[in-house]
Image (cartoon, rainbow, N blue to C red):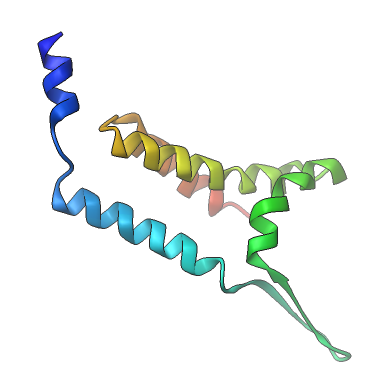
Length: 105
C-alpha cells in the first residue's frame, strides 16, 4: 500500500509536462484550421474543425463506421491525457492507440 501512495505522490517530470502541454496545444490549434479542403471550379469548400470534433461521432448514423472509429481518437486522446496526469502507465498506451487510429484512412 505504501508503494501505491508513494507512486501517486510523485510529480510529473518537466519532459512529461512539456509533452502534455505541447500535444494539448497542437490539438487546440488544429481546431482553428480547415479540417479538409475541396478545390472546385464553382467555389472552394472546406469543413470547420470545431464542428467536426463535436459532430464527428454522428458519421455512424450515416453508416460510416470507419469515420466514427477515426473520430474516436479524440476522446481517447483526452482519456490518455487524464491517465498521464494521474501517473497511470495505461495513458501512454492509450495515446499510442489514439495516434494509430487517427492516422488510418
